[in-house]
Structure formats: structure tokens, C-alpha cells
Image (cartoon, rainbow, N blue to C red; front, side):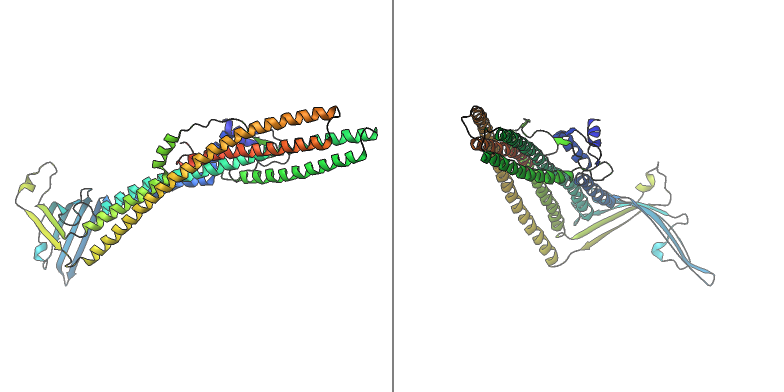
Length: 460
């Protein structure tokens, strides 16, 4: 694939001179596929999935067995055997199946069963506390919410990575363009110095003009060196976003260059759509999931105000045939009730009150977060549109300065201008070109910030 052939040229190699453009699209694909933060975001989903699996384990059927015997002085006091299965259900009813076989001289009378044993099939139902929600169902619902929250958190992590990677790329691209501007400026200054020096030798220019031309060369060289430092720094920062498939960091080799920061790119957006997207911002979703989890906790705490009232009923039979149901229609059963309730419910009411306060607190936080996200989006939209207008203005400014320089050079060539004026025109143009490059990078980063403020970024 194209991306892999490009990245081969990114590997560290001081002996290879690569001339390859690292496009913005290819760069983002590589970041999305291999950056540790992107992988961290994907791993984050596993937390939610495993939490949900653990919560579902609360509804796993459980088998059990119990064996106890006592023999003393050749007398079998008792030999009790019990095995069965319990099946919790999402409706709060626990189904049970039990097989008992008990013998012995001193066996507890209530444990006396027929010689072939006794089979019991029944259920345990919470009529009071736990009828609508219990610990297992609350844990499962909260685990489902947590799984959804990890998805929203993953999107937010990727969106932030997209913004940081975009900012690094266009800063690198602007610094590359600036480097070319100052390289061209130094080339022109050196060319003009050689021309004036030759004219001085021939007696056409005074010696002071050669000094002025030389100082221009030194000034341009100094500015070029600063541009080289900036480009080196932005290149090193860009390297932090480049990793290979083996999770090893990559470094750009000399000769890899970016897209031209002045090239047009598609800015496809509408204010209305962005204002709609922000209502589903991942940060807002995380607040909603937190509130939903706390609401489950509130329902569970409210359920604790009810008395414990548990009803148990078991059909009893000596033989069990899955095909025949008649043995269970006989009037043989074992049943019972369990009741318990604190007199003052202070612990339960206090716990519920704390949860309600937490819920109110988180709702207020959510309302504040929504306002903050809306305001941030409006700020980023305004910032993008302002920078876009500034860029258009500066394009016209650079074109005007270029025409002024061309005219000044023509006047200089016919002897109607001075080296000082030509240099001043060039410096103004170079400064404007640098500003233009920085504005172009700023606009593309501003677009990414606007998308990020709306909750958008990497497209899945």
C-alpha cells in the first residue's frame, strides 16, 4: 500500500538521501494506526468489555454440592448428601434444583428423605427489597454504562491526538516554507553581493556599497540559521507522532518534506452542523454516562428502603423425569418466607440522600460543561473565520509587496534606485511571506480546533 512505501523512507538513515513528500493524509493514517496514544484509546475499550463480562458473571448458573457424614463405634450417625444448581435471572427470580439423599441412625428428622432420595425444583423471589433492582442488576447496568463511556472516552482521546498531530504537521510545514524563504533571501543577497563586488572592481560602485551588501548577506544568514533551528525543532516534535508497526519510534530522514502549507484544502463545515455535533460531544457524553450510573445507584439505594421479603417455594418429588410433569403437580412442597426491616432506616435514608446530592451535583456539572463546550465552539468558529479573512488579506499584501519589489529591481537595474531600497523591499516581502506561511498553518490548525470543539476529529 501507498502508506507503507512512504514510511520506508522515514526510517533513520544518515546515508540515504530521500526525496519524498509526506502528505498530511498519509501522516494522519500512520498516526492513527501506530501512535501509542491511538493504541491506548483502543485498549481503553477492553476495560469496558471486561467490566461488563464480570458483571454478567453475577447471573452465571452455579452448581453446588455438600457432603457430610459421621460414624462412631460402628454406628453411622448420619450421611447427608446434597447437590444442585442455582440459576439467577435478570428478573430477580432465582431458580433452583436440588437433589438430597440422607441416611443415618441419628439423622435430623427434618432431613429424612425417601430411600431413593428427594428432588426439589423451585424458585426464590424477592417480593420487597430487590423486586425491581438488586445488587446484580445494578452492577450489570453500571457495567453497560461504563462500556459505553469507554467508547466516548476513546473518541475524545483520538480527537485530541488528531488535533495535536495536525498542529505539529502544519507547524512543520510552515517552518519548511519559511526555511525556503530565507534560503532564497540568502541566495539573492549573495548573488547581489558578488555583482556589486565585481562592479566595485570595475569602478562602477563605491566601496561602501560592498560593505552594505555584505552586511545584508550576514543578516540573511543569521535569519536563515534561526529558521533552520525552528525547522529542526518542529521536525523533532513531529517525530514524536511517528511510530512503526513494532511500536518503535521513527525519525524523518533528511529530504522528507511536507505538503506546501499554502496549498488549498477542503474546509467542509457548516455552523449549524457543528452546533448540532457539540450536543453529542464525547466530554458531554461522559457526563451523561456518569449521571446515568449515579441514577442506577440512586434507584438501588431507594430499593434498600423497602423491607426484605423473600418467598421460597420448592416442588418435591421422589423421582424425576424431565418428560413427565405430574410428580410436580402433587401436593408435595417446601415453602417459606423471610422478612427483615430496620426500624428507623437511618443508614438507608442517609445513603440515599448522599446519592441524590451526588446526582444533583453531577447534573449541575453537566449543564456547566454544555455551556462551556458551546462557548468554546463559538470561539473556535470565530477564530477560524477571522484567521481565514486575515489570510486572504495577507495574500493580497504579499502580491502587492512582490510587485513593489519587482518595480524596485527594475529601477535599480537602470540606476534609478539604490541597494538600500531594494533590500528594504525584499525584507518586507520576506517578512510578509513568513507571516503568510504562519497564517496558513494557523488557519489549518484553527479548522482542526473547530472540529475538536464540536467533538469531531479522526473519522472511523
